[in-house]
Length: 494
Image (cartoon, rainbow, N blue to C red):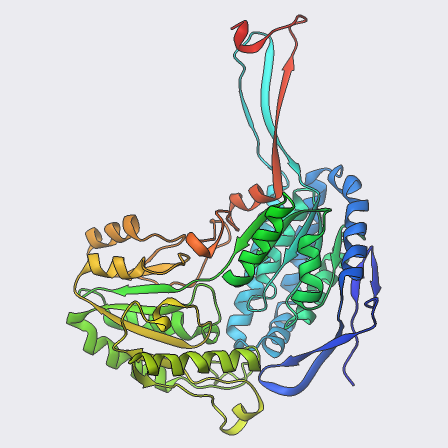
């Protein structure tokens, strides 16, 4: 019998008002139920926002260094429980164990890093233009923040949102993805253990239509921080605009690796395999397009396809597994639908292209690592985010064409170029229009102390990670102190 879990609202673990539930299952073994969770609706959201609003004034007046100390303790707990949480992540989300460990480590890194901001939360001081006058700017928290997170990084991405929002003095309603509710529960439990007061962070489980939508539209939510698809992100942005509230969007990607004719091909293949098939391609930074110079196209393609065919599918807990399952049946069928689209468009299927139903893979949602050649950059498989282990190879004549292809989608998150020519590298760094560019490395591997995010339909200009993570969760307030003892009329008297 699977354990039953609850929402966390106003410092108490409570069932959904409706009493309805849903199950979290192991995508590598769909018969394994990891837990039963409350299927929340607008009534649960209302209670959670009300609690967050009630505790905001007390929390914002807690000194920021004291708020931050809680997250140092949370980081220590995450370190102690890293292996336990990594194994749970592999069971609930499916990624192979070494990747799950990396996800937990990123959460640890972000928690420690942002905790340090509690002793900064930097503003500015500047000389006033009048005598006997002092001028400065400070940050103030917004109020209630809605944090809506995806399933593919079920510890890392929540820490990107929850920790800076809370350190900055906001209170939070956290709505995690319905595919990974147990990991969200464990993270909240850790923050409670670290000393986070009740009501400051509230956890509401459920589906997007039933819980996420009313949370986005709630009039007392000051900011929605959302990571997910561009299609849903657009709906979130429209809803926030209608209610004059802030919104931070981190959405899709159709990232490209450029392989020039002078590249180290073995290194480029390593990066392309990792970028294309790591996390079964279920990353917003996945390298789903390989833009390859025609002079090395044949050799690169042979090496890449041979490596792709050798990848071993299976349960991510097994050390022999290279590629785990995709998250659920709907996504499995969506990926296969894109394979059929690619074939109809005239692309050449080089490997994969099917659902794996052999042996242990029959128990879960496994898709074969798939690669297409003879791809035109305007094809749907080269333009639309598939979010699975599917890679397309696009031939180009030179660097200018490669950059043009790289920039030819509606997205702009991550990018990479493999070359031994420093001049080409710097041209790519200048001309590729994306939030992230790697040189001689794959499109995967962001570091928490640098800004993370993209351009065009990948995001709306805000960044997660780095010192910029605090920006979206705070308002600027300018303060003037006039100690002249007389009326000074700014520029009139200047």
